[in-house]
Amino acid sequence: MRTAYGLHIDGLDEVTDLGISTGPPAGCRPVTVRQRQADPPPPAPLDADRMVRLLTDGRTLELRRANGSATFYGPPLAADVLAHPYLAPVAVVVNRWAGRETFHAGAFVHNGRAWVVLGSRTAGKSTLLAALADRDVPVLADDIVVCDDGDVLAGPRCVDLREPIPGLGLPTRGVRDDTRLRVTLPAIAPRLPLGGWIFLNWGDGPALTPVGPADLLTRLAARRSLPELASDPAALLALAGQPGYDLTRPRDWAALDATHRLLDTTLTHIGALT
Image (cartoon, rainbow, N blue to C red; front, side, top):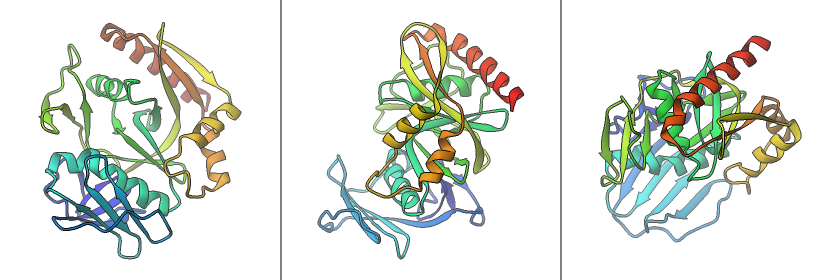
């Protein structure tokens, strides 16, 4: 079976951008993903047992908690888009039902700990993660970050770029009807301990500015996926107990090396203090 985002997934054996497991890793939630070319059920609000969501492309996604199923209604989806972006809404709902926090974010690994990268859709999250991967920095997730009991869970083994990164040494392939360039990531541990939070901004720099604990808690609470579902205040406080930084850097490909050096130096110093 395939794995990603803390899910043990049946029905996506052909999706090679996901992890693979002969048995369910500890803590993974079983999900069966199906596709149906049939009339979809009408949209329904999220409740304790079922969710029906109309997707932006006109397809409908139905999730049922009792049997762990996720069904896409509409034209068949190719394997590349099932890995990303269509698995993301499945992962968000299933993990929020499980009491985990999820964020629209990515994560990279420094000294065995996961650092979560957050920002708007135009903040350059995927660009930064691909550049870090090109510099032998392990990337744990792109697009969705799932936090569970102090750990960050691994996502699909790919990063999608809107445009090429000059000098990127990693191979890419066209996906999503050639609207994205996909970087394939190596296998990685299914979960790693959370190291901290990095919020992306454009500007001069690169520079890292600490985010205070109260401000960090406010930001994380506001960025939770499906905020209509209750969260454990103690769990949010624990997440905000890790260090947070604003990372400001210019819109310049040439600044990627300096950004990597700044992250490495700062996070190494933090690790030496803990």
